[in-house]
Image 1 (cartoon, rainbow, N blue to C red):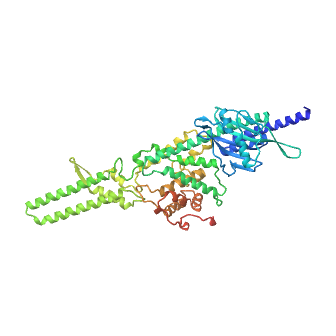
Image 2 (cartoon, rainbow, N blue to C red):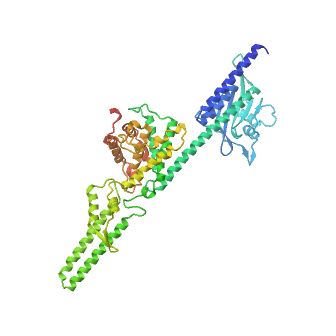
Image 3 (cartoon, one colour):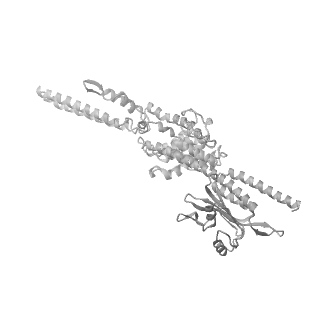
Length: 554
C-alpha cells in the first residue's frame, strides 16, 4: 500500500470518527424520542453510505416497532418526522413463549449478535433469507448486503434494532456499486448503536420521569378536589384554562405581548405549576373547605336555630294558654280573642324571622347592610329560658356567621382558607425542582396576587410578577366565577363572568393585556364548550365587556 493510499484511508477514518463524535453530541441533545430514533438511523446510513435502512424500538409488550424506514432507490421515507405512517405490523420477539427466529431483526435481537450478510441471495449460516428475496420480487428491488445490529443500554436491555441495506461505494462515473459492510464499518455502526442506546435510554428515563411527575401532580390535585364536593374539579379546570390562555398568547400578534412566546419547555413548566397551584389545600380543614352555609360546622347549625325558634314558639303558646286560663277563671272572656291574636302575631313574626335567617344562612354574592342589621335586631329581640338560665335566642357566633357579607366564610375562616397559599409556597419552595422547573413555585403561588399590589400573600404588583403567574391569576378567577358547584351562588353566564373580569381589569386586579388576549381568542368559549352547563353559555357581545379594548383600538 503506497503512502497516498494510506493517507486517504487515514483521512477517511478521521472523518468517520469526527462524524461519530458529532452524531453522539447531536443524539445527547435531542429531546424528542421519535426524532432521536430517526437521527440514529440517518447517522448510521450516512456512516455506511447504505441505500436504505430501518430502525425499530422495543414496545412494552416485547415487539419491535417500525419507527423510521428509508430507501433511496425506492424513494421511500416513512415514519419518523415524514408524516407518513409505516403500514407494517410490529415484529414480535417471541412466538408462543419461544424466541422468534424467523425475522432477521428479531433473530439478531434474540441471539444478541450483529448479523452482517454480504449477499442475501447467497447461503448464510444461521438464517434463511428466503422471505427477503420474496419481498424483493414484490417491490422490484435487489437486497444484497445487510447489517443488523441490536441496540442495548448500559444494563444490557434491548431498546432497539438498526438494520441497514446495501452499502454503497462511488465509482469513477458517479454510479454506485453495492458492496458488503466491511468489518471497520460494522465496528463504527456498533459504536454508534452503543451511543444511541445510551442516548435513547436517557431520553426514555427523562420522559418516564416527566410522565411520573406530571401524573403525581395530577394525583395531588385530584386528592384536593376529592376533599370537597363543592370545589371538586377546580384543580383540574384551572390548568385547562391556563393552557388555553397560554396557547392564545403564543398566537397573539398584537399589543405589548406580541413578541412574548412560550416554548414547549415553558408550557410544560406552566402546566405543572397550574396543577400544583392549590396543593397547600391539603392542609386546609374540611369543615372550612366544605362550609356550604354560614352556620355549617360539622352539621348545619340552622337546624339548632330552628329548634330554638320552635322552643320560643312553644313558650309563646304556653304563655298565651296560661293567660287564657286565667281569663276564664276570672270571667274575663273578652280577653281571650286578644290573647289569641297576640299569640298568632308573635308566632307569625317568629316564623317570618326564622325564614329570613334560613335564607341568610345560604350565603351569596352580597349581603346588604340592612339585612346584616336585621340579624342583630332578631338576636336582641328574643331570649330563651333554658335550665333556669336566660340566654339569647341567637349566640354571638351565630350572629357573626349569619352577618357574613359575601359567601359563607367568616373572617377567621377566610384567613384559614387564605393560608393555603402560604402552605403551597412552603411545599413548593421546599422541593428541589430541576432547572427546567425552577419557576413552578413562582407561577403557582401568584394566582391570588393583584396587579395593584392588593393581593396576597406577598402583595406583589404586576411588574413583580412573571407573565405566566399573571395568566394563572386570570385562570383561577375565571374558574371560580364559572364554577357551577358552589353552594352559595347560582352558576353565572359567560356574559356575567366576563363583565366581572372586565371590572377587575379596570380596578387593576388582573393583567389588562392578558385579559384582552383572553377575550380576543375566545378562550372562554373553548372552555365553556367542555366544562359549563348549557344554561351558562350565552351570546357574548365583546363590545359590552367593561375595560375590554378591541385590537383595532390598541
